[in-house]
Image 1 (cartoon, rainbow, N blue to C red):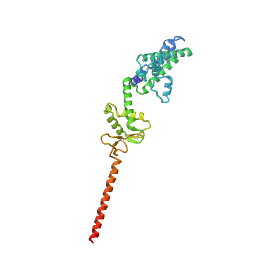
Image 2: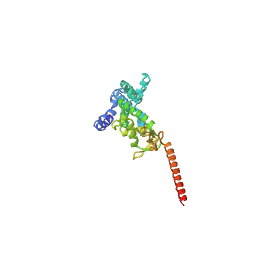
Image 3: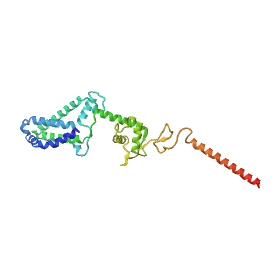
Image 4: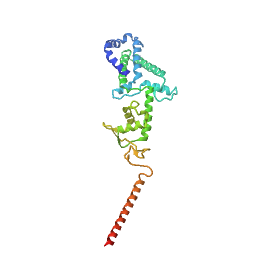
Length: 290
């Protein structure tokens, strides 16, 4: 949301200061220090440092190829400092202390000033440093707007707990074959994991993402049917029947199932024998009467 507001403010506000920015760029040599590092180069270095905090030049280049990475250069700096010299056992940048963000910003600003100095002493003026720094800032802003939403520490912990709960459920109740409707999976999941019984605790959209992450090969039709995904059959402790599979109505348990048909066959055989005996007696009585 903040990135969208920043982009909107830049879009609306830039035309108001467009002439001043152009004058600043084209008149950079007037306060550039006469071939030395001056105020214009300092401003260019700050612009480069700001852009490097959010997107590296390589990421900005890949932006034109349609690829957007979720990790900022500052995230990479924070994670390497935390895991390296500090020896912190963290898995996400949100777990790092906040002062590391300030340290990463300092590294980015120092890198930006170095780029500005190289352009100044290599080309002899500040125009290139200012123009490229401004362009890098604009590209980094566009990159940040298109970057997937970043989660804070609490949201990341909540999503991790949801993922662990779903994996435990899926490993026990889902199989990577067959076919089922999304509503079946949702109903069984909410029934067996009570903390997510309410859609407010876990929305259907998030649950759909969890299914896709657990089994990427499962395809979903517009009507909500999944291919290569189905519920595993499970014995109901109260009814003794299989639920959730193709044999949902098949009874199981001692004395039921394979033994019941055998008993039925024996009973049917006994009835058949008794009927034959009765017929034989009736025929014999008829013959004797003649």
